[in-house]
Picture 1 (cartoon, rainbow, N blue to C red):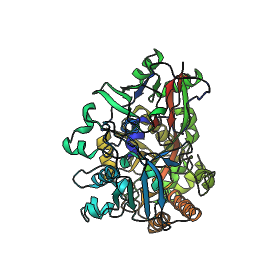
Picture 2 (cartoon, helix red, strand yellow):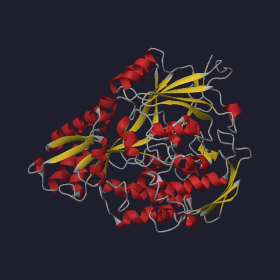
Picture 3 (spheres, rainbow, N blue to C red):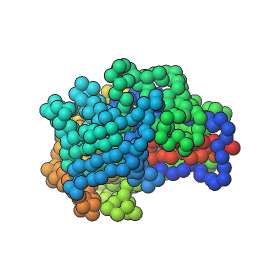
Picture 4 (cartoon, one colour):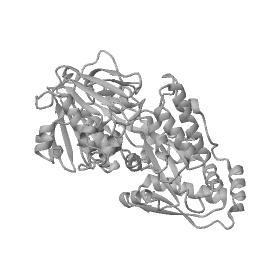
Length: 537
């Protein structure tokens, strides 16, 4: 999602379960008659047009209503979905997809390669101004078209016939197959979209190609999904209905869960997580997200790398994760979280890269601050830590403030802003140090490391390092997996050594789920797939 900060900032690790795993699978049990699963979302989707949504709640709904060329399997690897097969050219720049036979929209009309072409090109169009357009920049002339430097006809996607989609990439993109599972790459029904610009706002005009279809949407209250009888794999869809409650109050969601009105919930009051875990009502799983502190590297005092390094080393990450948050979060001693494959599928990128900084190294932190001219904090200027309004964010901010006071002798003021104002401050680099989070758009380390290229749209610290840029570009063009991952490891080390950011913890996703709920598949990106979900008898 374009601004994944938005997702993680709001939920602070209280999102959907993050590893693809069957929820409590058993054998020999059958779905209950008239299966009906009730799920609470933490927010109403701002859009369920796959080209326009940026929140996890939007993605969660879209994953039931649509299906891309691929989906992710239990190991977060792309597998065939709407596409039956594909062929990749030796140089990695051209991919030809062949769609399954018998694909249909929820209105019974055939899904064609032209629907994918139309969706991708309109997603890039300057007129639509999709917040997800950047995800499609990997297509040849994708960025050029989005910035009015090329035409739609020059974009590297073309329907050769109704079943064949030819894709040409700007450069070899090792993770492109995984991208096609992302909602920005879903198809859309051209005739419906062209007839009504508000097509995605109501059940009557919401046409999808996924396992469910939208049957009701009461704004700010609930959504209802029913089985799509036209879905190609409808025989595996076990639930007749999915009811989604739109609850932005985690206490309300918990009360409904405790009273038996919900079967699953994605938002839990932080203070309640330990109790619920003990009661067996919550499962905690990894999530592809990192909470970190960003430093504005262009303004004093954080234009001095030693000051940034001192602040990073003075943080007691273990205390924040284990004593304050208590939701299974893991101290982050690097930027890229666990759960991503390295060059070999059975190797984890984080495990292979290891720890790149020390946790709570107070002696070194004080030494570095003294070398920067601020021994014991003397003469250190007034600085402010910015965070977006949230009780969890406030808790962490106050903990960091005390650690920097105690360990470095510096006073850090705290400032909270509502989301839109906060994001504008980050976007314009109008901060000194700020709390940020990032969750992956696709299961590859690049989704984290390309944030900090010079001039990048999500480069809040305004970091500019030609050596770093060259490594990222080299990795983007690499075909050899081992060489590519080695380059990404080098880039991450530069990022941490330069203390552009101070990683604090890797996020987790506590989720309320009843033991009777089976067959829920969840990606490491936080998206639930309810295709085979059901309530056990």
